[in-house]
Length: 187
Figure (tube, rainbow, N blue to C red):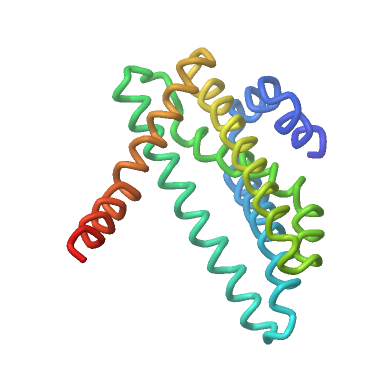
C-alpha cells in the first residue's frame, strides 16, 4: 500500500495507471479522509485549543464532508465534460476512485500545516503557501488521473481541467463579483 501511495505522489503515470485497473472506492475514501482530515485537524487543534473537543471535531467533520461532496461533484463534472468532448472510453467509477488519491499531497504537507498552526497567526502565510502548493500538486494529479482513466494525452487532460475550473468560476464566483460590483456602484 505504501508503494502505491508513493507511485501516485511521485510517479503518477505509473501509479494512477495501476490504480485505475483495479478501482477501490473505500481505499480512496480513506486516503481522502486522512489527507483532508489531518491537514485541517492539525490547524484546527492548534488554533482552537481553548475550544471544547466537540467543537474542534465538528469543524473537522464538516470540512471533510463539504470537501468530499465538492470533490465527488467535481469528478462528475469532469466526466460530463470528457463525454461531451468525445472521450467515451472512460470509466466514471475509476475516476471517482482516483479522486481520493489526488488529495494525498495534503497528507504529505500536514507537518508543515502543524508548524503553521503552532506558530499562531504568524503561521498564516505559511499555511497559505502550503495550501497553494497542495492545490497545485492536486491539480497535477487530477490531470494525470484524467490521462489514465480516459486514455488521452496530457495536454488534452490539462485543458479539460482548466476548462472545468473556468466553468466553476463562471458559476460560483462571477455572479458574486457582479452582485458586489452592482451594489458598490449603487452606493
